[in-house]
Image 1 (cartoon, rainbow, N blue to C red):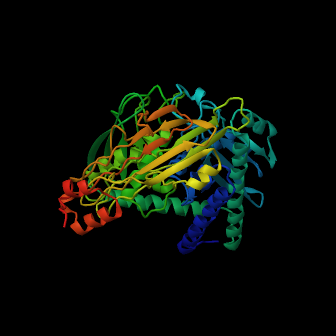
Image 2 (image 1 turned 90 degrees about the vertical axis):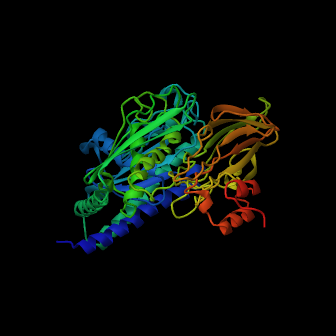
Image 3 (image 1 turned 120 degrees about the vertical axis):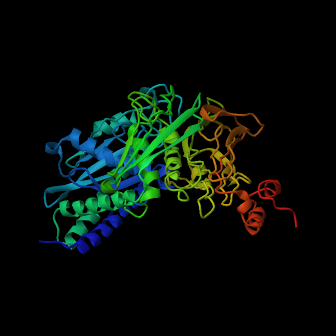
Length: 549
């Protein structure tokens, strides 16, 4: 039967709904608050060749674009002859998954009338994976926790009790972690049910034709967008905090016909600590940043990603070799789009935003009783927080918003519910957005205290403390971040540290850079910012020249 392009287009739209329900199922059933509250996940449909056909809008680019490579590893290692209906596969291998051990990727084959037609895949961040916990202090990946190679969680519908037993024995929160494994499997099963309904409705029993249409159309649309850019090589560099020493990130973006090549030659070498980034994660975020600027309207799939070629020297901090520590690879990984977009700005002036806080200010808390002999239970908490984004050419930056990761800020109530802490303050940080014709987004001020009888250790994984987000086209830098106790004791931006009972941890998240000359910002908007508490009276005078009426 010949299928018209319009029919394929309708089916393509339906697939987006299919994978979105897949993601929603994971959110509804997950044990981890980072999945339920923040949406730190991905979900998608892949064809028989492992090409990503559709991804859920809910999710993060680091998970989605890395998963686009991960499914190929599953197919190669499981082998077509060992793929059966009812199977479920999983891994958290950083180099074959999404870059660190805390993300578990689950892949399930989809069958139609006994014939294998494709794969569903999803990823979620689990609250614990053993080892040192979610933090940057390890010196190799073996210290960071349990590495699960690509293996079968379910073989023809039968769950492997041995796999579950190994995982339970190696994590601090076994019920939550194993519960999330079942949630991931249920997520794929929900996608499969909706896919079967769609295929029945459209009278198709295979996905090859639809997959070719989606991927070919997306590839050509992306190539056409790149082909409109002026050819040439555009360079940028950016210094960021790193762990013990600053890290220099460099990129050369080459527009070559209908292809775009981003090469990170010249970037700093590996760190001894877990801020290193596997290439799969660097590629995921570099592609995302560039695609947002060049081809934002083209749906994200294997076809739209193919025209982007991302390279980095093996052994640099953005192309970490096994067994380098990579636990907090997101910190530098989330800064990759700022570097790439800075180069693209020289090619597309007036298009890309100023630098933002970019890296999430995630905090992993291990809370325990002050009295070791107490019956009070220990608890593991993960809290996601975001600073401000960079101002855009035509509008202000977004405050307390995750970019490029796209996760949501977790609610105070949900976080306090799962552990013995009190969040006394969580509000916008006045004056943290960089001045400009368009103001940078604001960071947050957050104060956290252990409850009576408790103390906690936290793993800091923060950046933009020594190197704030830079403005663009005359815009000023955003405010730098800071980490301290309520008594004024300064703490480090990375590593495991203690908050004793009775003390409060005070986080001041960085703001985004401004865009354009601050003198060009209309005074009515400056007055509105002042009235809203976004800027101080001193900033209104010094940065914007606003004299009191």
